[in-house]
Length: 474
Image 1 (spheres, rainbow, N blue to C red):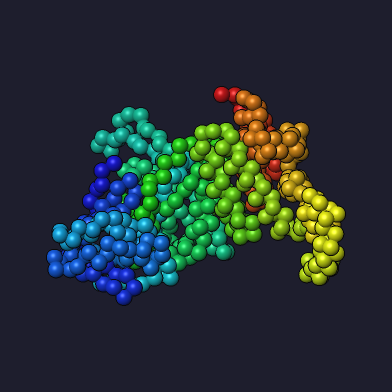
Image 2 (cartoon, one colour; image 1 turned 90 degrees about the vertical axis):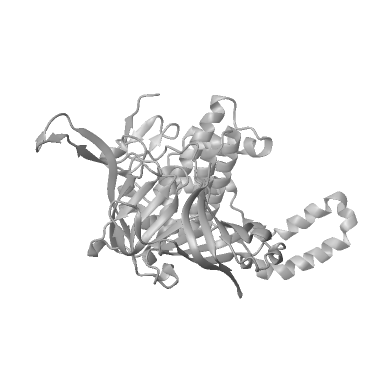
C-alpha cells in the first residue's frame, strides 16, 4: 500500500527531554494505518549524533509540535527514527502513538485527557454489525414521488449507561474508510466529555471487541468546542497510529452481525443493561485478557491452536473467578506459622538423606506441603464456575473437562476430525456463556454445540425451557 500525504508542515520542532530540534519543513504520511513523517532541518544541524540511539526506553522517543500550511496546530507523539540522511538534512520518523490536530492554531498544548471538551465522534476499526434502523430513500420530481423507494439499514441508535449517566449515540458506516463512526448526542442531558470517555474507554473497547467477536480499536477521536456536521471532524482530532486491523474471521456467538440484530438491537442491550456490570467484573477478574484470548483464537486457522488458546483462557478465567469468590486453597497452620516447623522437619530429613536415596526430593516436597490440607484442583475450579453460572453440566462438558483437556495438555490431541472441531466450538461457547452470565446479559446467542443449533431470541434467563428457537442447519 502506498503512503498518502495527509499534512504539510511549514515550521515546528522536535522535543525529547531537554533536547530540541528546529524543523524548517515537513510532510506527514499515512500508510496502512501507520503515521510517518519526513522532517527537514537546517543543513548546518549535526544529524550524525543521532546515529547511535537507544530504542528500549520511552525516553528515546520524540514529540513534534508543528504548524501546518493550513494554519492548524499539530502534535505527534512517540516518534522514533526510521532513517537519517545528514547530507540532505532529512529525518524520517514513525509514530507509535497518535497525532493530535487542532483547528485553532492559538490552542496551547495541554493534557486533553483532563479536558472537559465535548466528545463528538469516534471512528472505530474492526467492528462489523448489522444495523438496526433503516433510512427510506424516496425519488421525487416537482415534489411528487416518482417511483419505488429504497430502504437501507444503515445506522443503529443506542444509549450507554455509565456512572448514573446516560449517553445517546448512533453508529453508522463511513464508506470512505470502511470504519464505523459513533456520533454522540450533543444535547445537555446526554453530553459526554472527553475526560469522562477516557475513564471508561478501555472497558468500552473491550466489551465491543467481545460483542464483535474480533478486535475493535479507536482510529479517531473528535472533540472540542465545535464539530463539522456531515464529516468526522471537530476542533480537535486525535488519530491513532497502528497497522490497520484485518480480522480474518470473527466469533459469531453474539449475533451482532446477523440479520436477527435488526429488530433486537443487541448493542443497546449491552450498553444499557450490562456495561456497568462488565466494568465491575473486568476489574475483578480481568475479562479484557480473556477476551483477547477469545479474539486471538478466532484468527487462527489450526483447530489445535484454537483449542490451546481457549483452554489457557478458560483456566485463567476459572482461576481468577475462584480467587475472587473465596474458593481458595486451605492451609493449616498458615504458611507463616508453618515456616519454622517446616525448617525443623527439613533438618531432621537432611540427617537421614541417604536413607531416602533417589526419593529424597519427593520426601522434602511432601513435608513442604503438609499444611496444605485442602487443594482446589483446576477441575474443581472449572466445575465450580459452571455450577455458579447455572450452566447445565452435560455429558459433553464433563468429557471436555475430564478427558479432552487432559489429552490436549499431555498429548496435544483434541479429538479426531469432527470430534476435534466440536470440542473447539464447545469450549469457545462455554467461555462466552460464562462471561455473558457473569454480566447478566439476557439477549440473543447463536449456539452450535453448547445448546444445539439454536438462537436465543427473547429476554428470558438461560435456564428457561422457552429461550431457544431452532435455526435451520446451513
